[in-house]
Length: 266
Image (tube, rainbow, N blue to C red; front, side):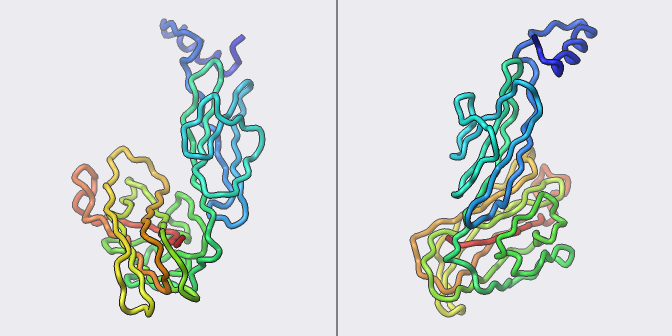
């Protein structure tokens, strides 16, 4: 017997004179994914919810797409290492749901930033919680008005990170926001420099990034730059602004916004 939630769709199809095969026609709603701390030190968790009888939720923690052979969700999943968590709902009478996903980062407690300074101030409308908010290991939501987010318009983000003593670093990550409707774009590139005195800096690495397409959904992006391990007392991290909004955007030619909520070394 088909579950009750299928019947209204079948009645609509009958009234419209259309005939549908009952199986595999309707797509399940996406599971509700709730996370603990995205930036964590010990452990955190991922929880799934979708109240449909006979439904299974399957998940992966290695970034691969969940299938019906993936791990079956039964209770909140304990996360102890950095990972990409993905989940999907399955039911014998329906098409699988879309994939829901979240990134988790285990923060390096031995590489805590002592002090941070910004060469360019954020826009006065989006000061965040000050420069220290970029190294507090607190994740912002999709609401860019939250104090976790610091917003820049037409400016590069240039952050100077100082450590208690020289430590080995081989990667830097920046957590940024994407929201095309709000004119918020990820950076066009990233550069990282190191210094022993905070005055003279040498390039460790740089990368350019493709601009998102016009169908890109709002969400979080994590810009990462890896390089040969280096003993660093100071780091300069530069997130390069987009030249301007692209031709397809309603605000084409205007400066893009760049929002960042965290920068950390590994």
